[in-house]
Image 1 (tube, rainbow, N blue to C red):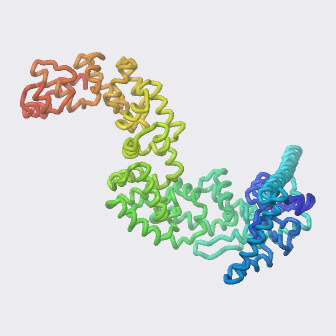
Image 2: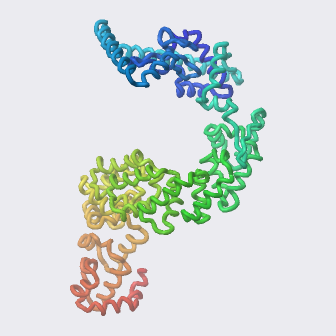
Image 3: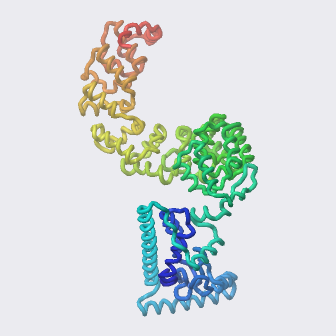
Amino acid sequence: NVGEWLGEERMMEGCGFVGGWARGVSGRGVVRAVRRCEMVVATVEVSNRGRKARMGGGQSGSVGDDGSGGAVKAGVVVLPAPVRARKRKARRGGKRVRRAKAAAAVRVGADGKKGRESGGGVDDEHERYETAREETFAVINAILKQHSDDVRSQRKNNNKAVPPMPPSASARALHESSNEVKAVSMGQRMIDARSLTTRNPDGSQDSSSGGKNSGQLIEVLEFLRGLGLSIEDCGRLVKRRPQLVRLNVPRSAQPYIDFLKTGPLSLNDEQVRRAVRTAPQLFAYKVSMFASRIDFLTSVVGLRPEDLAVAVSKRPHLLWMDLTRAQVVVDWLSAELGLADGELAMIVKVSPMVMLDSQMQLFSTLDWIRNELGLSETEDLHRFIMRFPKVFGFRTETSLQRRVDYFREELQLPQETIARIALECPVALEKSVDSDLKSCVDELLAWQVVSDSKELAQLLHEAPKLFYTRFVNRLRFLNDEVKLDTAQLKAVVSAFPSTLVLSVERTLQPKWQFLTRTYCGTTRDLMKAPHFFSASLERVLLPRFAFMCTKSRRPSLPELVNGTDAEFCEKVARCDLQEYEAFEQNGSWVLVYAPVL
């Protein structure tokens, strides 16, 4: 319990120290830093007795104390020397180990007996620790909330910055000891000059800017704004990469921008902005190392100059990637997927992250595709990767797995249907479950196209692109223009599910005009051949009907639609196939339909 260890007064001084070193950081940032680091409470293993002690060592520990409880330096718990010595001896082996184990067994038995007699034990100790921990964080949260409220109220009254709480002598001593460990928050990183040294384009370290005033920050912000970045982008970049505030502009920064805009990359302004926004650590690497990576991407991977610019703007990390690991990835992917020339370049252009992943990560992704999507064959796997290379940019076990679980558990789709959706409409794997996939299924149920999971599975198996198409427009056309009721609409969709993915302007409406104007049919004729919209207008409907007009016969709609050309000639036209093919190739039948066309 920090209240027992420090006392209320010293804990207030510690919070004053937090406000002292975080000059320039908002009160909300101080709260985030304290809560994230959790520097005030820790659980450590202080001995080999199997007993855990609270930070500070219970009754005997204190700041800087070498007692049995351990010491605390800037949020790091250090075991005292006697404990470390006992641990070294225990690791040496031999008789000491056996004697230590025997003594420990005796102590454990005695402690357990004592705990049972007193009604306490490990469970009570753990409960007391959890209670003390909750009380400690409640006190700290109350202190920080009160300080934040005071700051907010004073700023509202006089619109002036409120100075932080002055640190006491003990807080200053703790602040000096914190320089011995790595900074743990953005505020410490921005104050510690050692973490803000920058690299010149030639590779030399530049720390001379540590003594400059705040005018350099203005220069850096003006430089970023000159690239076309917004104020919000500049704030996010400085937060992600505090070293940017010490960037020497333009001597250290401009060579990187010139390299991106000229030479083999030739990025435009939008691509440069995207590269800097994606990887602000770009300015920390040598410009000379970029050329070898560009040569690898062009010669080994096979990226064209325009594709190279797209890949680098998406993932600038390619400019300092590990070439040895990248070569392993190229060889493994080519062998695993059977990639042809130029296919690897297509994958890297869409998903450049593949060059930065390890072979184990890529193997895990392909293994997930085989097991969860059911694409075990190399041909199916290759086809899926080429149609959806963005799969390497997803976390398959989390984001994509949620879509697959929705297909399998909620929609009860069989594995064959899931595999067909992945091959024919892989974009469904990146659709939102709540706003896209569920709304699609709800529309089908609302229009009464399907009534149960079995009919839904059959419909999605035949027309997997429903998740990518606005099929409601097709349903409205069939309902308003064709005048189909609910039962007739379901019959037409069941006979040919792809009706819902055909274009209204290019396919459905011209065929309906042929049926009503040329063939002089009605909805009743359509219901005799509900798969009517599956027949091609130019290769089936028009030439066959024109050929039957030369025979002075009007066939029924099923006779006009069903079967191949050979079956049509044998069963309907009763002529030789060569005669019909000659009539079709002549093309004079097109003049009959000039008004319709």
